[in-house]
Amino acid sequence: MAFPTDIRLPTGSRYYTLIATKKTFNSNYDIVWSFEYKLPGSAISAPFNTYQVGFTTFLTNLISPISSLPGQYLGDQDPEFILSAHALETEDSLILKTQEDSTLLLEGGILSGTLVKVAFDSTGLYALTGRDDRPGVNDKQTHRNALVVRDYVHNLKGNAPLSTFSSSFTNLSTDTYRTLRFRYVNLGEKLHIDYREADTTTYTLLTTIELGYRSIRLQNLENIYCGFAFSTPISSATDTVSANAFYLRNFNIEGYEGADVTTETVITPSLSVNPNASYTTVTNITA
Image 1 (cartoon, rainbow, N blue to C red):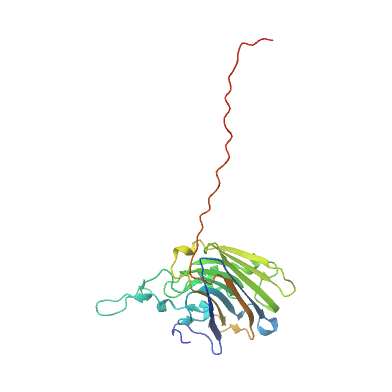
Image 2: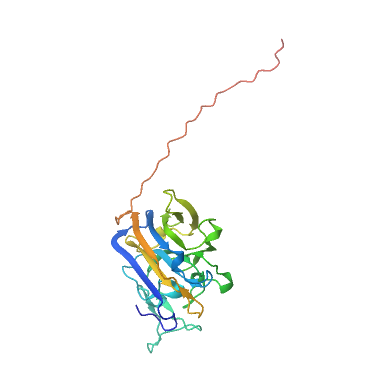
């Protein structure tokens, strides 16, 4: 897929984005999805601090990627190709730009694409400030082998090294299949991220992300798909090296597939009340 000329990657770089469109889910209810991946250490033919690989998983209402950006953006949609937005123009049909040469967009809907996106990035560059005024951090605030989370307007909701959350899951490399599970709950207020290694059936909580919004306030939430993106390498630096092999399997999604949102009024029973008893105080009594 073509992408802007200001994004450059070395020859032989690999990147793709896929969306599971066979089922749609209503994000007003909990959505749980998981997959298994393997990134063998033997597939990384470079020093630990030079190989670059990143993958993400996300919830979206788009049935296909629109100008997905590789490299640092790990398959994010180009902000100039938002379905419900259009560029502001002058009377002469010239597109208005900011001083940083970013296109000014008029958003027609509250949600236009990704609802939440979780990245596992060996470079941490997914957290960087980017093109078209994309919010983020500077290069000194990125982390190797990072977990990065962005919300529906690309704001950072998480940016920390994996070692912050786990003493065993500290980098992306694994010679056996590792399972990652994601639980989008409480109308989008929380995202729980769990993992388990191949030698156990028990999940371990990696972290809980407080997203800080309730998805019921957003639009276009009845037809949500789950997706995945992969990129290697992440930048065009001359000393970067791609991962040779990456394996993905058993992509599983669970949630409510209907469009209706049902509510129920819960009536709390009245509290029992003990009647007050009347007492008369008697004074001046002697034994």
